[in-house]
Image 1 (tube, rainbow over the protein chains, first blue to last red):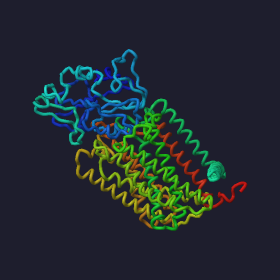
Image 2 (cartoon, rainbow over the protein chains, first blue to last red):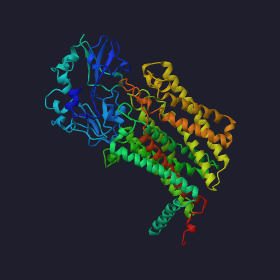
Image 3 (cartoon, each protein chain N blue to C red):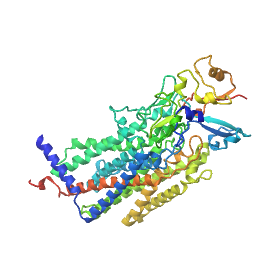
Image 4 (cartoon, chains in turn red, orange):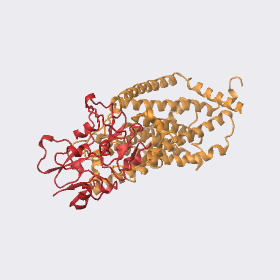
Length: 201
Length: 409
């Protein structure tokens, strides 16, 4: 979460985050039972599991459909991006997203000078202005250069995997083929997320 | 051609001039509205500098009272058809000379709608991205792009119809049917479309179960056809009081029948909605629970919605009783219906759609002072426009402002 903030030049004040890690009681995927604010020091707690949610990079993204000005679209590699210079800030995409993955700059974003990540991309992590939307783009400034997204790189448990689903030799293709259980969040909405959750037990 | 243009410009300039002239009550009213407009502009300037952080909105509840007012006012604009249909289809004599006041109200309401959408934008400087041809218009995929088209189209239709009829009356000429009747009929269908499209804006979002229900469109139309004519009933009585324009009680009672039927349908649809939400008891009932009874100790909207329901029910019973045939009671009833429906469609529809968030978090919303001042400013602006339109239209309809008495004619 904090690696993401640093990598993607997210506003520190007010703090904007792309990833929300939910704490859910064992045995339920009802997101209305999710706890958003818990003591990070006590993790892991008995009887709970943790579900990180961020942009699911849907194959059929509802947010793209509703944008009145084509300010957000799906790139050929499947990543949904936003042109921060074209967005009018109507926040219709924020209402449309079933995963609460989009963020709006309600005021001028502030990043301390020495915290700016100079390795930027136009549709990726360049600093945003007030009044526009932003969201996770799987660190496209890194992934398009052959590196892992920041969240994948820093996860101490190795719980995050990233790769090309279409490549049969990739690690993610192996997981989808061989692991016992995997889910797409809110699959019933027909958004076809490219973000999968699997359980290794 | 040049003479025609010159004549038209004389007409326009006389209309503008008369808008600045009136008795002391007119000046007082316009002065008051101007003060509120200025307060609104001041508040909006603050919002432009600091951003939408000046409002009560957040990433969790990302639309608030601006979009709520917008939704309500689209309904008011659409409700003008409730006068147009009786006059142009059923040849109602009582309403015949009054229909233009309904259409002018629609124009004022649309202007307010456009203002409410504009203040809700994070980047109002980029509004031109929405102009077809100039920007990049996501039509037909985005319902918001449909809304831009239908609202501006409706504005143009009504401006044309009102402007043409008034200019003909000014010249004491019989209006040419071909020049306005087709537009009147287009406007009838168009009026239904503006409110349907606005409903689809919400209905089309699969990730928001509270809105993702087919009944939103019908509910919008029913509540609009109650609140709109109720507003017109009040407006007509003001016109009757401050001018000597002839408005019969019978005309007001005709509008009462319209409000009566619409209100009954509106309450019926509300009951349908409540039943479906609570009886089936599936997980998606959370928003409705939050709205009607509160959820996990959060109940900011509960007093709002029960006030709305109390007002709507009281309004409905008064409308059914013969009591509301007396104008005093009819006015009380209209106020109850307008306020009840405003809450029901605003705080009762827009906000609970966001609570809880799609990830189950509960964050409450209430408008800030700055946000409220902007809203009041826009309402004052709308009333200012409507007053000016009436100030021009009434003397033209009465013949006191006409080509015959042009200075130098």
